[in-house]
Image (cartoon, rainbow, N blue to C red; front, side, top):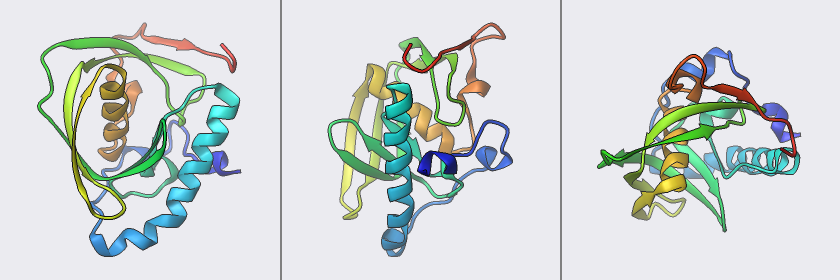
Length: 163
């Protein structure tokens, strides 16, 4: 099971900053991408949630995110910028602490630059829940978990599978 490869809250590797991916490393990412895909699909099966997972969540300290909403895409060396002043509060969940929701505040809109697996460059303008999702995954690349962004000490609740 690939979900077993996901690091859990408290693992010191989750707090490390990831290094950039070079173009020459693209082929070497493929086994990790398969693990990320399988872990995300297993998480969806159990928790009925999950749209993305970052490489550090399986102990691969490289700057890439596996996103699978309508179709899979790998975001390599993502860069977030132009954070909106307008903020939103959301209950955030994570594959690293399944069942725990954390209330965080995020920018409502953000811009994202990244490469795909063909080394094509993209710029996306993100809004709402997609903006929040990418901010969450991007934090993983910098060794930051949603628990560290909790609004206050009462911003935690338990969610059971199927809720």
